[in-house]
Image (cartoon, rainbow, N blue to C red):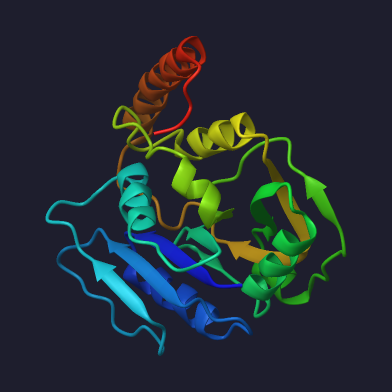
Length: 227
């Protein structure tokens, strides 16, 4: 199976570590799309990976970055959407491909996440795939045919509820999100946050929450979930 990767970044140093972990995988993505939201900095090395680096004139929030990156994907079976503040094990993409082959109803696969580097290096995975009860937005992988059916995240949602958008649209298409407990990643939570204040972030969460609820009602009333 072929995979492509979308990575919005606001931290070049973290991105560098992530790219190294991607390049060390047993199954290499055929293309990596980087949305560089740091117009004054450039990516130092891509470690031999096939990449497209897009630097918008003005930095984008996470949801427009996801939309832009996903729109550039082609010729693959699944797309991994990754934060720049994570590290992957060397069988990350190989394991995901295996899950998609076994779980034909799964639309999205997420790994088991740890936030302690020692755990990442020593913890052993469990050969089990479980259905998820809630979405996770820092490392999720979606079938290409499914993501092509789902409309881009609405422009009312800039920083939050992008993963809710895909969760909701996935289940409306009778596909599930599952977690592969045999694939463990490291997440440096908060290491790649924008410089928005807690007060501003709280206000934006509240504002976009109401917009997200309004959008869901609109979709339910119309009965139309596609493009």
